[in-house]
Image (cartoon, rainbow, N blue to C red; front, side):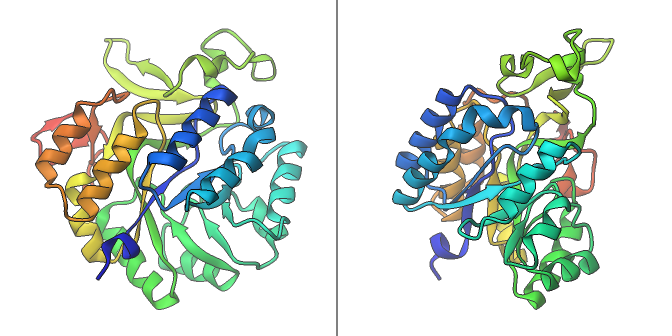
Amino acid sequence: MDTATTHKLTLGPILFHWPAEMKRDFYARIADEAPVDTVYLGEVICSKRAPFFDPFIEEVADRLQRAGKRVVHSTLAEVMLKRERKATEDLAREPTLEIEVNNAAALLRIDGRPHRIGQYFNTYNEATMAYLAAHGATHFALPCELPGHTVAKLVQKAEVLGVPVEVQVFGRASLALSARCYHARAHRRHKDNCQFVCEEDPDGMALSTLTGQHFLAINGIQTLSNTVVSLIAELEEMKAMGISHFRLVPHSTDMVEVARIFRDVLDGLLQTKEAEDRLETLELPGPVANGFWHGKPGHLRIGAGRAA
C-alpha cells in the first residue's frame, strides 16, 4: 500500500496575524518545498484581519495548486457581526471552491453541497458526525482536545459513513474563542481600536501566572495552549486506527522542516526518537506535549515522564 497516497499530510490555516508579505513568502515556500498534500487558506480567527491578505488568496491558491497541492478555503470559527455573516455566506455560496466549515453559520448557505467540517466545529460524537454527513459533510477535522479513545470511536463511525478523518498532530492547541479580544485589552486597547497589536506576536502572546509560570498563549480572541502539540510518537497508532489526514498548524518556525519530519515518519523512513530530536532542534514557540491524546491534561508530555 502506498502510504504517501493513503496517509495525507495537511497544513491548516494560519491562525496568527502575519503581515501579508510574510504570508505570501510562507505559502510560496510551502508550494515549492513542503511535502504536504492539502493546504487550508483563509482567516479563521478575526474578520478584521481578512482584508490584509484577501487580495492575494487567489494568487496563492493558484501557485499551491500548480505545485500539486489541494487547496481548501476555511471559514471563520466565530461569526457574530454582520460583516462576518456576509463573509461566511459569500464563501459558502462560492460553487467553485472547496470549503471547510468552522462555524454552523455557513451550513445554511452551503445548502447541502459537499463541504468539509473543520476542527473548530464541535464534532464530539457519532450522532453529530452522522447528522453533518447526511447534510453534505465529506471530511471531518476533529477538535484537538479529543482523547484517542474518543477519536477511535469517531473513526469507526466515519468508516461506516465513508468519510475521512483528520487530526491535528502539530501546533499549539486551540482552547477557546471569545467575543472579547484579550490581546487588545492586555495592551489597554479596545477590540474596535486594537490597532492590530496581535501582529507583534507571530505565534501568540505568552500568558504567565502570577508566579511566572508559562501558562497559555493569546491570539486575538483565541486562547491557545502554551505547549505545542506533537503526536509524532502516536502516528503509528493513529494510522492503525484508520486516521487518514494529519494536520500541521502553521507557526513561525521552519514549517517545511516540520512537514518533512512528519512525512518521513508517516512513510516509515524515520524512527520516532530521531524525529522527536529533530523537531526539538527547531525554534518552537513552546515545549511539546501530547496530554490530550492520552486523556490527560493537555500540557503534559506522556511518555517522557514530565510535564511540559
